[in-house]
Image (cartoon, rainbow, N blue to C red):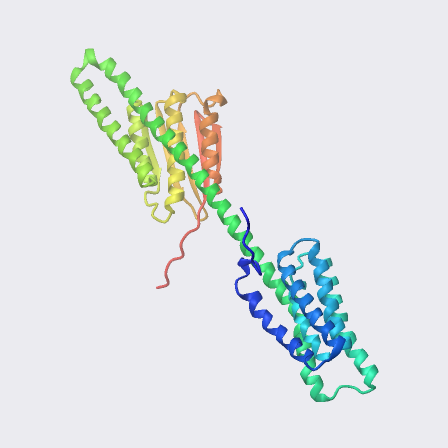
Length: 376
């Protein structure tokens, strides 16, 4: 497909066209020249326009420096052999010098601009053997200073634009990573939720099988409770998928109590009951870790009693899950669960420790920031 002709890169908008207005000044001054000098002058203006266009399309390429050198040479020739006012064409190369990202190339370009702009002044003084009048200095010096400083401003602006582009790319990458992590988290939460519920239903189904012959009424009640549990789990899964609802610590403690009771393990809780000052995100992580710990107690500990303590201290939240079972004898049995908890706790700078003390002791510490109380 044939590409359509474009005078300047479209992403530059109207900026290159606005700058072309300043070409009218050298064209006006050339009307005062005659003969070959005038023709050469118009030829250089035409070449200057070509360099101006090509510099936009050769940005970041080796040709960029060549075109810039030609443009500087034209400004120098005009200022030396035509009129000193042509030095104002230096605003064009000053703009392009600011596009150099490498400091070495930027300094070289700036040095060339200084030579092209200052040398004609020196030559003018030598030729005329007179220094500039105060009025002439007021006319030239401010513009000269602005011209020599403009590459720094352009370079800073381009650098900022580049940083903004990098920030946009970084944000896009972060969004992709967050989405990926969210998918992993949802999959993990679904797995943990269903795993917890299935463990509970398995225990209850075993109990129903034992009670069917000896206590049919109790078996019927347990089966009814299994139905309630399965419906609650289904609702929880739907909430997780549709609303991404994060369970609170209090809700998870109720689920843990139900799980331990179904497994025939007595349960005791000691600690705070108000967790409203903890963010929902942190509550969700801590709650799921407590649930995972209780599930491990049911699956692996052979315990008869389990106690949970959650205390809000000045700078951290301390969670301790104890059981009176056989303790830690097979690290592999706890491996996957611990890794899952460690991954979650890493998101809130939490740490986990597992030890033996008349059974297994799981301790979790999560740093918290207390909200400052409003002054009275």
